[in-house]
Length: 287
Image (cartoon, rainbow, N blue to C red; front, side):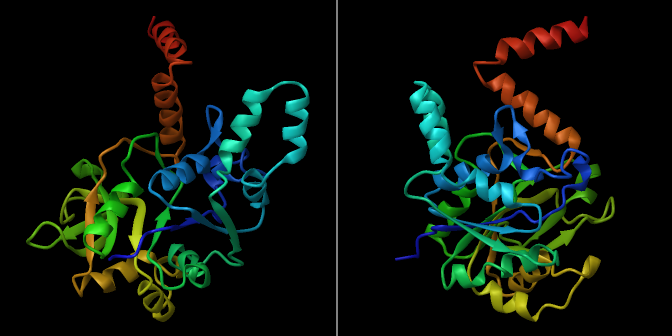
């Protein structure tokens, strides 16, 4: 029987410089989509996939993320005393009782591959997911759950991919597929326009086996003097152990202001509390 996927890594040490000055003192992962931080959506996605151990690779000025996923008994007591039971329920939903939260400090930002490597001791010999919170998925059973399901059927390394326009291929890591259309031959980082091997872009959802750690340890720093996860994936791909799963739900790039705004507006429109507000606002702007 294949091992169950119960652990997920969340690299959250980035500076969030695109969102300054908002992110000077607040982690970008805590920027809200209406009333819930981006990182909480990613954690909920992992929980839906059956994952119960959340591993955050953090950096300086990221303590607020740990506080967000910690219990706040004083606040719960205050709300209970004032009969604000709905608010208490919202707080408790942040940290389900069966889920463990672990925080690891990445002293130096040396790339996504290095961030994943920081979690090796906690991961051990288990398969694990990697979720980049900037790639925001609103709801549904897509994203990491699709990778977990694929892994249970055929234990390999998996990438989540989505189709992009030809002119946008240079913004993403693009997968080069084998003749069978299932295995990944290579992951080409931001190919020049007209040179992409496909229009399938890898997004921030991965399911990896622990064998990747030995590869990451041997990697020399690549682009930006960083340990790149893509380089390790390319080495594994040569042995035919990397496959892809199409993303079947809507995804937004919350690492950009445009994507973040789109995520908020779409989430508000899909939320019955705010759908009418969005429609009225849109009509007034058009007029």
